[in-house]
Image (cartoon, rainbow, N blue to C red; front, top):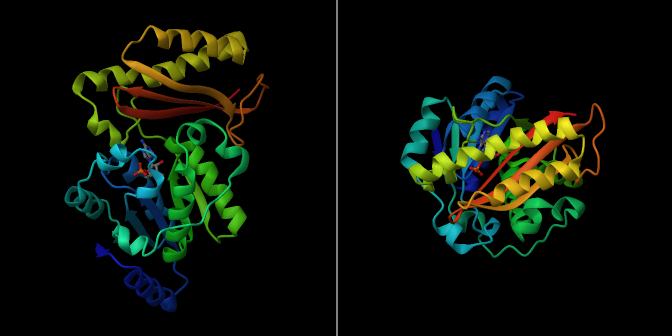
Length: 283
Ligand code: AMP
C-alpha cells in the first residue's frame, strides 16, 4: 500500500493510472480508528473497482464540540496495518493544513435534510461534511464512493451533494456491521468502559423492539411514546432522539404504509459519549 499525504502526490498518481486505462477507482473516506465496519467498505470497493483509495482525515470543521474532536480516537499505525492486510491500494493521509490551506468559508444548505435528527443536534456538522467530502471528491475523483448506513443521514446528504454539484460519482450505501451482541461498530466505542459497552447493547435491542411494536400497533405515535418511556427507566442513557422516518427522504412518518421502506433512527449519550444507530425495514 502506498501512503500519500499531499494533494499533488495523489493527483499525479491518479493521472498516471488513468493514462494507462479506464481505471475504476473506489474511494472510502474515514476518520481512522478503523474497525470491521470500515473494512467492510474497503472489501466492497475492492470487489467493484480496479483500485481502492481510503482516506483518513479527522475533519475539524464537522465537530460541533471541541472536546469530541480532541478526544476522537487516533491509531494511525494500527490503521495502516489493517488497511495493508485488507488489500487497500492507497491511503490518503493529509494534514489539516493540506486540506484547509485557508479557512473554509463556503456554506451548504441541505434544506429539509438538515432540519432533522443529526442536523438539529449537531449544528454545522453537515456543512463540515459537505465541505470535506467535496474536497476529497475533487482531489481523488473516484468512480464510486463507499459510505456506511451507520451514518444514514450522512448518506442522504452526500447523495444530495452528488446530485446538486453533478459529481460523476456513484454512491454505495453499505450495511451496518455489528458486534455479536448487536452493538453497531463505531470508532467512538473505544471510549466506552466495559460496563458502558454492555449497557450500549440496549441501543440495538430498542431498535428491534421499536420495529416489533410498530408492526403490532401500526401506530408511529404509540410506538414512540412507549419506547421513549422505557428509556426513562435507564439512568445510564440520555436519549437525544428516536425517530421513525421514511428511509429515503428521512422525514418523519405520521403513519406507515405497506411496502414502504422505513428507518428507525436513534441517538443517545452514555456518559459523555454519543452513539447513533438505525434499522431499515420494509413496512
Ligand atoms: P467514520 O470513520 O466514523 O467517519 O466512518 C467512515 C465510514 O465508515 C462512514 O461512511 C461510516 O458510515 C462507515 N461506518 C462506520 N461504522 C460502520 C459500521 N459499523 N458498519 C458499516 N459502516 C460503518
